[in-house]
Length: 265
Image 1 (spheres, helix red, strand yellow):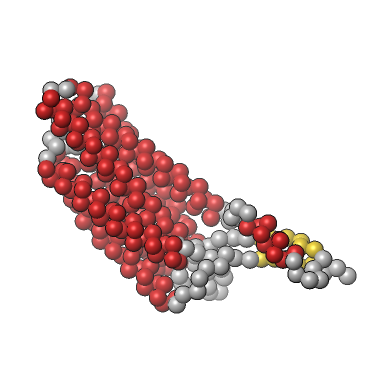
Image 2 (cartoon, one colour):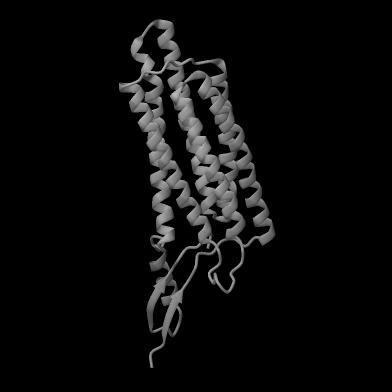
């Protein structure tokens, strides 16, 4: 009788000490939370004192990033737990779900920014007071975001962590959005110095660019996390598995190949 085989395989990653992996993931996630608290507080204070929608939108973005960082911190503490009787495939899906929640938070940020920007552009102009502190806070924010995006990205790549990768993607795009806000404040300042009225709208326009960045990031995260939660097979992996299994001597037929992702497995 012909032999039949059902091939079920999971993605393999480099083998590390589980304790070392947990410690590194928790440390980088915890540092991200602390940095998010400091940056959010600074942006809120400067945004309120200057009246800049660009900085306020960045403050809200950072506040939601803080929530996302806390979710990530909690998820990496749970996702590395070993399989048990009730969770026979482990707890890796917690990371995928964490990244999904971050996507929703980013979209909420985007809706608020667009609403406020349109209101300020067409219905209610707000006086902006670009100050040295505003520029200083934004540059400090960009430096901190660069540091933590690099740290998160390094650990995410090392352990193939989708939750940490989502956080790293957030903070790398925060650098660009903060830069756009700085440009908006600079244009407002130049418009005041040169008496150019139309430059007063540079700040809400900059906020709309921030919203565009948020939408782009959200879309990238949404596609990956939804695929992981719905157990979509990685592109091309099924054919590679079939080719590898079919090369086994004596094999007559491959019936089915099934692949699912849970966290970094």
